[in-house]
Image (cartoon, rainbow over all chains, first blue to last red; front, side, top):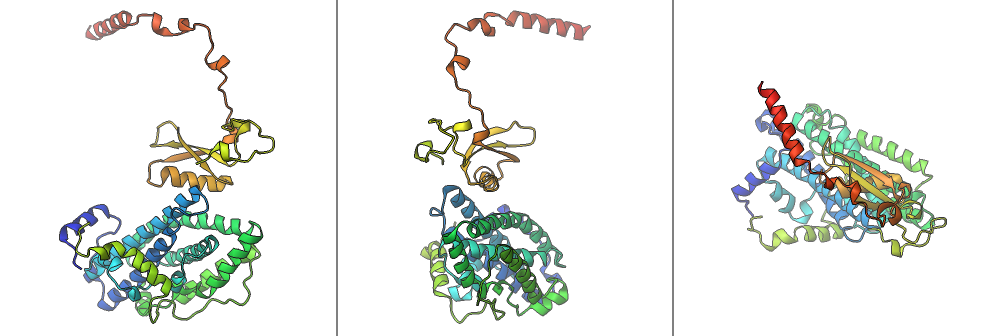
Length: 279
Length: 122
């Protein structure tokens, strides 16, 4: 599927968030590693955005419906700028990267392979993800790759609100009586093995660390995330017995999970219906 | 959006109108927004939320998620004093003598403008 040139012009006009940069200033191995980092981050945001948008129209109350949908849109927006930066790096097209791959080529972490499930599950997952994302972004805020550092500074300003909102919901469910708490604990128990998968080691990680693009190894970020989120959960008296966060590869899979295969068919439905269409 | 008719009665808040003040449902919050710096705060609408924190988030989502406000005020509806008594606001007797319509200002204004213009020209 090829994108007409005039469409790219339109996109550039509405997307000033990605600063222009000189691709040739980066050594090829670093360029490749940076591409992997951007793709994994963008896929995470993209997939979470689509999962959470599944609540539009059916969230527990009207106001939360608007709020949660808005959060989901924010993540799609974050995915957009990350895909655009990647497209600039590789000379590709952001829409093509976002929508043009088969389901088994997405690199989102396994935490995002689960379906929407119930409200407590979506809250628990987003809380875990947003906190992981905050740790990841903090390690990129002082990245040696200036265009990324600048972009991350903007993303973090939006993520502050996401963290606040999900923290409120985590606490409400934890203190909301027997059923909400039981559902929350069940969700956390199911998600905990995948809680650290946003920090799965990258092939290009050594190159990123050496170039100062990533300022700390993923394993260290995982420790930071685990320490912080465990402290919050312990403060709420939540102890998940028997579930330990896995440390294995969290982004590689033999084939797409059934849940993600379904989500992929949803979010590519329109583009697959008329592949040469101009939007 | 809130609907007074569907809400269960709340102890101590028995006003059937249920719109504002003591009669208000405790989970309704009125939202005021400022469109740009220097503008007055204008009523935007309302949200339903169980506490002030969520009310603030919902106000943000409903009245500023497209960057249409620079400031929001979120006020519990119970804090609003309602005044709608017709005896106070719409008294039955003729009050036209309190309106300025009986005075023709045009000629006086014109004269004043001429005078000022004349002073400026000297």
